[in-house]
Image (cartoon, rainbow, N blue to C red; front, top):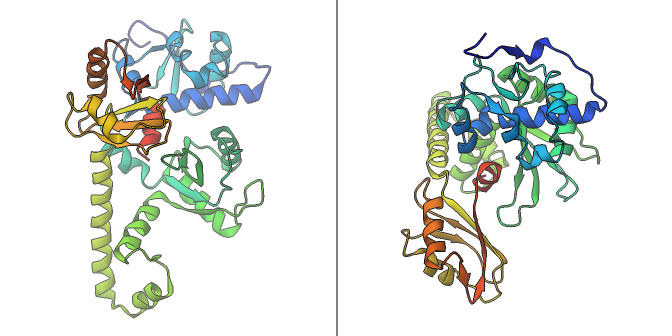
Length: 347
């Protein structure tokens, strides 16, 4: 009994389903919605869980596109969730609501989340850089190696094309290290035969910091190896301390710059549109917006300098144009960048 609700832990129930693959996809998608990674950044869901002791109506979840693509039938969703073994989700007695288990509290901040993820997230590179690879294929591939929480594809910022690498979040530090150890004992190969390289996310960021300190050269090139081999133990310890400090500063800087609610997307630009024309529309309502756009592009991203200002600024811009945003004589489509798309923007 929890408040006025009788709850069922999904680890203690079973149900039948005609399509186990769909069940897995439903479980995976909803557990992603309620995961640490998504919930810390998803302002909409964070607001929803404040309304009814954490319960989220299925009528809300089935408005999300990725879940809609699987099913909007409540019975199908509940039947699938009863097969989950993660212990993350509880089902309300009415079977019309679910929530994140109260014994699995959210990280209190982005910084706490980053800390918890550092040693249970694996950086994997070497995938073919093709449009054939999508998140579902990667999830299916990694599930062969045990339980995972989520997979985040790394993409090129402007083109949004997959760059051949991904971050894989495991339930525990030990799970992540076991995966890396297995990759060392038996090289992991993708379906097309591509050999994959695996390292902890923390080690990946440390290597990037060391590469930067070496003037852009790979941290493990011959010169760097020779220098490290000739260093005394004391100098090695000192460099490690400096590296850890740089890594922490780098992560803190990323956290500070990844402003939520500060990005607006524009689409439908004519070939003559310039950054200056876009700025003219936004400058009266915000200070020095940063415009990610090159002349000839069909779309643009407007990044504001303060968190949670995009909605207000866009409303003012549209109001100034009597409900429209017209650039170079043509109305362009404008919207806020939120949720999963916002997370991808800051990668």
